[in-house]
Length: 561
Image 1 (spheres, rainbow, N blue to C red):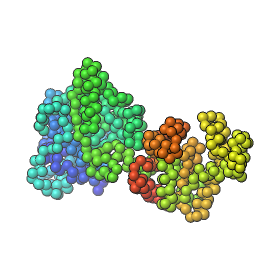
Image 2 (image 1 turned 90 degrees about the vertical axis):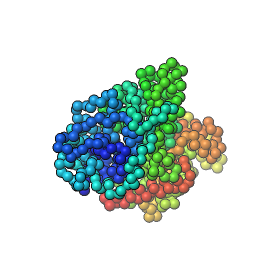
Image 3 (image 1 turned 120 degrees about the vertical axis):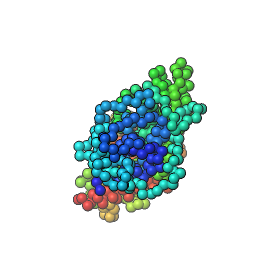
Image 4 (image 1 turned 135 degrees about the vertical axis):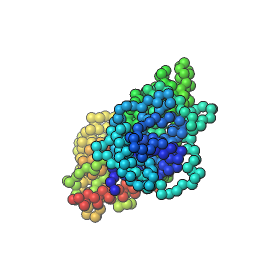
């Protein structure tokens, strides 16, 4: 069976009958498409007529909006698929004017699939030809377009009669006391707005955006959270950069409704353009941001602007969520799942001891880095503690002892001749010139000692060595590791831990963190990210996941050698 990177699914069954069959249809389609699946709604269309079928308008009703939410919810079971419901033919009755030109898509479909049922349930060739003609008359497709009739594969399990006529769950509603019916036409507007973080664009985002695209007929303003609005997010270090989020968002929006003008802007405060633009008429919010939408309207009234019509989208449940993850589809859960994964290709280090794979483990003060090192030790890693190497370097007879004394004077010594690191620290803290003088002496010595300890690891038969070093990247020691592993923690939690562990004031703890690379800066140069934010057994599960994936990489590298 051929598998295609991109496909177009043409759904011809009336929506009420189609909804209960969506799960098997999507499962069947997912066997043929492994990346982008476009969905085109054309309920009631026949592919057995001798005349070429033409795309016709689908009136915007609450049933259509609910179906869009239902489809995206079902598609979330197929995480490898980037599903995009095309909205070009979904129109308000007042503007039943279809575009005359073929719509270009970001990923031209290589295969067109349909739920259309032939009379005998076979792959009837004329029907497939009609399907291909229809697809190419609507969208830009690959020249060698294939076609697949999904029925009867998806229809092998009979559904109860009552489920075929069951109404769709109401997923979208206007914030209004007036009850709505599924067949009720949806009011559309010239200009509207929607906002969010839109990190790792997922199906819940797509429902929010699709409803906004259907409601807007001319312009949609899309606010994308940035800067201060990101600080409270879970694992903000793993958020995609603003420009990357905008690129993914823009591609999706232009694909699903190219007739709209999209104004994508950074959201730097809770109100954004929705609070100040007099031309906007509606705002799409989720259950979580409903109160924010109400606050926007209060803000508008205070500034003598008309209220926006609010449309609230229900959250999509994540049927695959795990312990410590939200039960809704969310970017936070996606970021949580990234922990322990390889984010970028490892460094090639042929100069390191043969048969030894070296990790550099780092993190801000209070991140729990040392506890991660102990968990890795328990799994079989050889640990090199850079702090202990530092003590060896400063000790009398150590390689850094005499150069440090000569550079900073004998008044940094205890009476017994040991270097008083507190006095030395106060001498260099806040003095860049003095600090550089010290690190130029000590860091190369620690690196030399670490390389010597690597040989000990080899002698002991270890195949993984971990250099535990808070200053790994500042010192440039990534040049002697295959991968950089970083432990992240919110700064507020790091401050709390430092205060509790070291007895410092909050101000002193914050000052310490400000003199280190931030978690964000560390992650930007990391291969694997971990976090100790949750219970110990969650941390252990993360570390075991990262370790098991590492072992697979090592085995693969050895097989290729």
